[in-house]
Amino acid sequence: NRIFTRSSTHDSNEDYVVVDAAAPAAAAPGPHDASPPPYAAAAADAAAAAPTASLAVSSEFETVAASDAKAILSLASVSAGALPTSQGNDERTPTELVAVVDVSGSMAGENLRLMKKALTFVVEKGLNAQDSLAIVTFCSRVDVPLPFVRMDAGGKKAALHCIASLKDKDTTNLSGGLLQGLDLMAQRVARAGNAGQLGVTRSVVLFTDGLANNGITDTVTLRDAVRQVLPQTGGNGNGCAVFTFGFGRNHNEDMLRTISDATSGGQYFFLENPEAIPVAFADALGGLVSVVAQNAELCAEATPEAARLVKVLGSAYPAEVEADGSRVVVRLGDLYAEDEKDILIELHLPAVAAEGAAPPATVRWTLRYFNVARRAFETVDAGLVVARAAAVPEDQPVNATIEEHRGRLLVAEAMEAAAAVADTGDVAGGQAMLVQAQEQLRASPAAATASPMYAALVQDLDTVAEQYGSRAQYEAEGRKTTWMTSKAHNVQRSAMARGGAYEKSSKARMKASFT
Image (cartoon, rainbow, N blue to C red; front, side, top):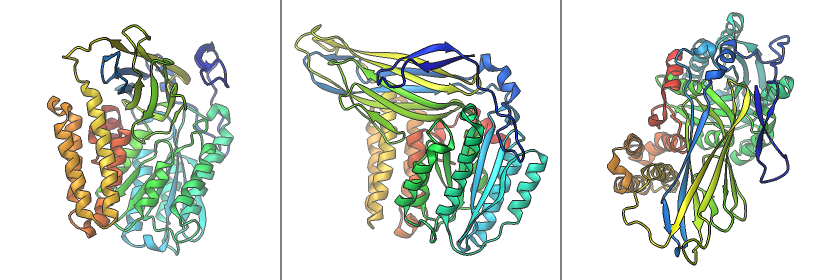
């Protein structure tokens, strides 16, 4: 194997060089499943054909007048490879999962029944012998009824017995349960050592109605506590993803959404009825078990004095912009098979005294990620050049792809803004903002291309707007659906029926294996 590494760990303008190195060995299993399983042999045998990621870049305009000081958009499109069609659920990346389960009094009755059904679904349909599961329960106290166990026949039997034994109790120490779950994962990662940091998909899933009334009950305080623990839970410091599942109409979606947003790759799901369970968990697990790249990081570097990187549009991923506009780093995290990540960055081009007085505006893009199948880091480079000319062609074409993603971010931001207005009591005003966003989409140059993404965006705006019919409906459904849908479009991943345009064949195959 060949591993890509940095030539320096301190230089902010570091380049990547190729060195020969052995792939990290899997840690040997210990008692009670103390370490992750060996990597699937089938995946290792398929290394030569393993999925990788590609990178394509473009700009809003190919040419900008030399005399103009202009802000334009640049698009970096990351595409992950597909899983081999022969690869099934038994030949994928191992998954380590901690289920953090609310058994407080507020979950009594239907909510507890739904939650147990959901966990049973995960064990029976989602996990196999190379995966490991731990279960944490919380009420006023926190327990670990199931430490990490391999999901072979014996492990599944133990897990199903544990799930069947769950009973509702008293108050809701959500923070205690979540932090215990993250600590279990941190201990797991510490035992695996450096060699076990990558090549395994790690996640914590939180099942609750979200009504925390014990322990840390403030959303921001809990978010900060989660952020402090996350670096110890894997991913070379990025931490594991946390998926939050809110049961029924009475859960606190603010807390659940904030927790998931604090992690790399996390999502919030609203489970209103039993029929939503297989769809929601298949969405989450179908992605987790189709991870093909980890720790993906996108870097843009601009030509000094010819272009300045201003900002990254959207709020889906952590991003750092150098103060002088010379460099931007966007941390994408894990990539699912056939994932598409389209990152828009605003560039500022200064006025040039005359054509040829300054070099073309050039941006060098670099994508770095860990190829799970090859168990090695890889890099992909792409360059963008914007010409500066005395005159700009009148027939310069519109970049339809950039317009599509401008519209995608418009929808996500409009949904968040609509919820903020509705939260003040002006539900009709929030609904009007969603209708206005639809009108803006229809007026976009990309609307004429009959883009499937645009059709999905308009449909999702319709669906969300329908749930702003009254304050009661908004608080019971609309707010939860709004946040779930806006995140789906921000990160380009489906969440149940929302953002369905982002679901690809690899994830669909994995989902089908669970249902």
